[in-house]
Image (cartoon, rainbow over all chains, first blue to last red; front, side, top):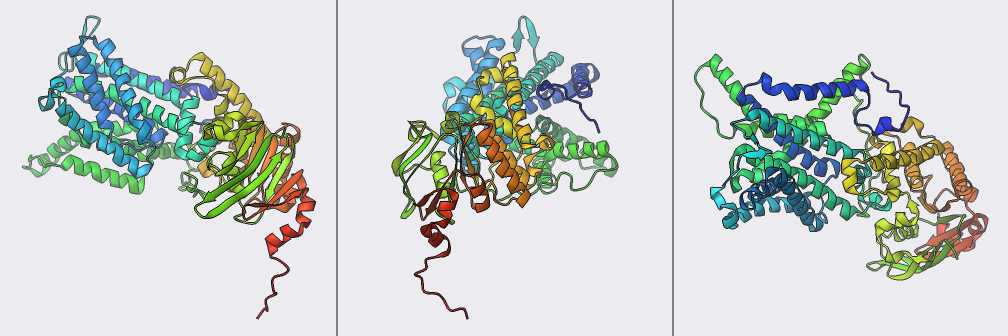
Length: 366
Length: 261
C-alpha cells in the first residue's frame, strides 16, 4: 500500500494523488491515442461508440451520482443536443466548431429550465417526471416536422474543422481522436467540479438537503445547475452520436436509451468517473460480445446462428439484477475491492467495505 | 441590542401549538441553554431560527435584522450555524469534504470559473482548507480527515458535525443536543469545547441539551420550556430549583399519589 506524504494543500487539490498515478493515466491516454494504429476500422468505430456513451454517462453521472437526482429522461437531452447541432449547421450554416458547443449550451439551458419545476419532486416522482420529458421529446420531434423532418429523420453532415474532414466512415481515426478529445475535456471538467465548492454543494444536496441548506447552499439553484451541467454534457454526447449514426430520427433517442443510460451508470458504479467508463464499455461492447460468443458456441455445437430477439436486453437486465444484489457499488466498486485486496495482501478483510448503518436518519424536516 | 431576539413567536401544526408566544433574547458572547421535557418545542425553536418552519406570529431578529425576510439558505451567510439532533452529515463524503461544505458561505468563485478551475478557485480552495485545518486541530479530528462519514462511529460524527458548523465561522452557533448519545468522557470534551468556542472564538452559543450536568457546567443562562411555553429563565441553578420546572419534569405535587400495587 502506498503512503503519500503530503507537504501542501495542493496535494489534495491536484488531479493526481501521486506521480505513479499520473504515470498510469498518462499511459492509458497514450494507449487510447495510438489505438487507431492497432485496430481495424470496425473496432475503432466500436471504441468511438464506447467513448460517446461514456461522455453521455458522465453527463448523467453528475446528476445521479453526484447530486443524487434520478433522471429517466436523458435521452431527451441527447436528442436536443443532436438536433440542435445538426440544425445549426444545416439551417444557419454554422461550422461544427460553433454548432457543437452551442448544442451543449442549448441542451444545458433546456435542462436547467426543466429542472426548475422538476426538482421540487423527489425520488420516484422525479424519475417519473423526467420519464415524461423523454416521451414528450419523442413526440415533439415528430410534431416539429418542418424543422426536424419528423420520422424520416435527418442526415448529419460531414464535420469540417478548418478544412479537415471528420467522418465516421471516411476518416474513422480522425473521428475517434475528436471524440477522445471531447471525452478527455469532459473528464477534466468533471474533475474540476469534484474538487471545487460546486461539487461539494452537489454532494451536500445528495446526502442531506436540510443540512445543505443550513450550510448556506441554495438547494433549488444547485439542483438546477446540476441539471444544466449534466444535460449540457449529455447534449454534447448527443451531437457526437448524431454524427456517429449519420442518420437519426425520433426513434434514435427513445425511452429505451434513457433507461439504458441510467442502468449503464448503475452497473459501472454510481458516483465516479470510472463508473461512467466501465458502464460504457459494457453497453457499447455487449452486442459485440454476444455476437462473438454466439459464433464461438455455434462453432462448437454447430448450427444455431439464428438471432435471438431481445437477447441483449435480457443479458443487460440480468447483469443489472446481479449487480444490485451482489455489488451495488458497480464494476468500479468491485475494482476498488480487488485493488485493495492486492494492495493490502494478505491483510484484506471481507468486511472492509461494509458500510455501517446510518444512525437515526430523519426525513421529517424535508 | 441582543444578538438574537425571539419576539413573541408562535407556531402551530394544525391544532397542535408547538411554540406558544415564546420570547427570549440571547446576548452576544454568552452560552444560552434551552431545556425542557420531550415535545417542549426546543428543537422547533431551532428549526424556526433555521427558517425550516415559518412562524404564525412573532418575529425573529438576528443583530436587529428580521430573519423572516431571508430564505433558509441565507441564514448561514448571516453567520448562524447549527447542528442537528439526529446528525445530518453528508455520509458519502469524507470528514474533510464535510467541513469544507461549511465554508460554502465564504465561497467567492462562480460556477463557470469552478468548471475551469481557474487559479483564483485554487487560491480559494487553499484558503478554505487552511480554515478547515484550524477546526480539525481544534476538535482533534486529524485521524479522521480522509475517512468517509458512513464508516465513522457515532461519537466522532457528533464532533464532525460541530466542526462543520464551526467551519462556517459563525457569530451564533446552535447546538441541538451536542451530548446526546455520548459517553461521559466525550461529554466532558464537549463541555471544554463549548467553553473554548465561547472564550477563544468569541462565538455565542445557543444549545438544546438534556444533560443537566453539561448545562450547568457551561451555560450562562438557561431557559426552560414546556408544552411550547416559557416556564423559567435564569441561571442553571435557579431554573433547576424553580417549582414550575420540577412540576413539568416529574409531575405536580397536587396530583393524588398512586398506590403501588
